Amino acid sequence: MLGNAARVQVLEASALGKNPANRRAAIARYAEPRGDILVDGKPVTGSKDTGEQLRHERTYRDGPLYAPVTGYSSQTYGTSFVEHAQDPVLSGSDPLLAPFPFWGDLTRSRPAGGDVATTIRASVQQAAYRGLAGRRGAVAAIEPSTGKILALVSSPSYDPGLLSGNGPEVSRAWARLNGADAQPMLNRAVRQTYPPGSA
Image (tube, rainbow, N blue to C red; front, side, top):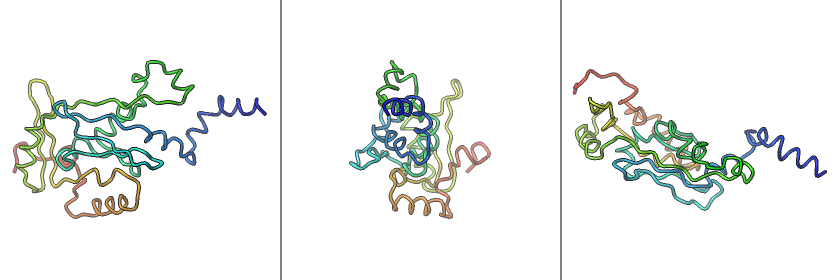
């Protein structure tokens, strides 16, 4: 009996961990706060402790302003944009965040999520957002000498915090945002083509 238990825990652990019926992966994913996305060195994201089984939920400061950059991190709908592209770092699953990976495998622990710095400048982002004033359109401000993205704005926008959790209100928000004629979840800055400088 001990031999079978050891075989299951050691040899079959990976297959059992990836089984879609196993909620432990989701529970482990949200057990710790995600790292933050930084603009000008300051976090525009955070995590709050829900006290529920999926313990930490993503929060957004100035969500509609930065949504085209951050995207969303949802316990129900996954991730998008920087939240998706940098998910291994933000969630703490990137092997480079674990100084002793073998120890983490034995203890089934995950390092804390790392922060991700963007090249977005808050003042440029705010000016572009105010300039669009809710009209449909996009602004992408790029520093020509370096290629750094200084602002990435899409209008109309949405609050990604509405999608963070996993309850029925999240499903309703998802349906409302995706069904809206104004298409607030469409990131026009990266998914539409506009002539440069057009208004």
